[in-house]
Amino acid sequence: MTELVKTIVRGSILELVLDRPDKRNAINSQLYTAFDAAVNTAARLSDIRAVLIRGEGVVFSAGIDYTDFLRLAEEYGPDWQQRMRKITADFQRVLTNLERLELPTIALLHGYCLGLALELALACDIRIAAEGTKLGLPETRLGMIPDVGGTTRLVRLVGPGKAKELIFTGRQIDARLAERWGIVNQVVSPEELLLAGETLAKEISQAAPLAVGMAKRVIDGLADIDRGLMLEGWAQSQLFSTEDFMEGVQANMMRREPEFKGR
Image (cartoon, rainbow, N blue to C red; front, side, top):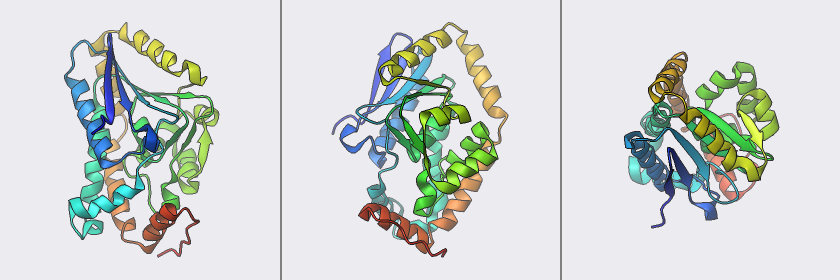
C-alpha cells in the first residue's frame, strides 16, 4: 500500500506530508491512522525542534472521505449510530495527541482545507496559508457539527461570534479573510508556502526547546479544551441518529442539494 503520510527530516525540522493526492488528500481511516502514527513518531525523535504539516498535490486536504462512513458499521458494529460518543472520542484522540505534542506544529495550507482537514489545522500551533486557499467547516450542511475539536478550537481562536457565523453557514472563506479573523497567521504566495514554513520553523528552533514546549503547554492550558471536546461528542451522538444526517450524507455522495426536515 502507498505510504499515506510521509515523514521527512530536514535538519531540526520534521515534515509530515499527507500523501493521497489522487483523492485530494481526503482523510480516510487508513490515512488518519498513519497520521496518528507519524505524530507519535515525532514525539520520540530527538533533535527535532518543529513540525511542518502539509499536503501533497493541489490541495492540503478536502476533509473527511465520506465514503468512510460505510466502514463505521464494520468497525463499531451495526448499531454504530448509538456509539457516537465512543467514535467521536476515537477521532478526537488523534488530534488531541497532535495538539499536546510539545514540539511546535505549523500547518501549511493550500488549495482547500475543509472539515476534518481544518480541524487538523486548528490543532496545530500556527497556520500559514497560500493565497487563494479556501477554508471551511461544512458539517452543518451535512446534518452534523465539527466534532473533532473544530467547534472548540475555532471558538478559542476567533471568539463565539465569528465561530458561529462560519459553523452555522458551513461556508468557505478565503485565506485573506481567515487571516483577518485570526484563523491563519500568515498568507503567502503558493510558491513561497514551504519556504515560509521552514523560515518560521528555523526561527523557532533558535529558542530553547524546553521553554517553547512549556510555553505551549501554558498557553493551551488557558482554554478548557477537554470540556469542549466532551460537549462536541455529546452533540454529535444526538445528530448521527437524525434523518437530517442521513439525508445530508446521501445528498453529498449523490452531489445534490440536501432536503433537511429538522428531524
